[in-house]
Image (cartoon, rainbow, N blue to C red; front, side, top):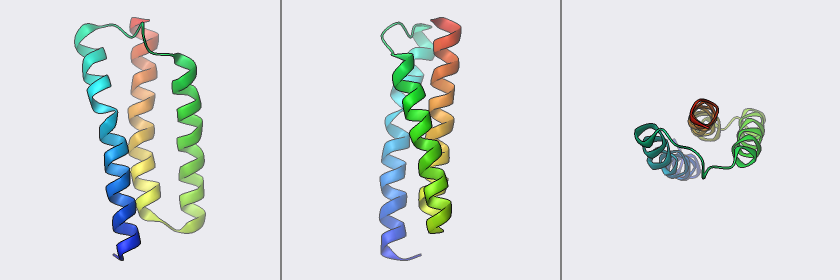
Length: 84
């Protein structure tokens, strides 16, 4: 793995991990009233496009980390729909 891919993985880990506290808080409090559904849907769209872009660049870091962030965002939308 070259240095650029390593930077990509580190960046992706930081972005994916940044969603964890919100997921945990929303799960524990059973409340997502302060979360904008539109933000999540826009973010999901962006993550999908990053995955497609990463595939075209043949960047495993971009594809893997964007996929993890996508799963976290989808989970947040599910919590939003469940707990409103």
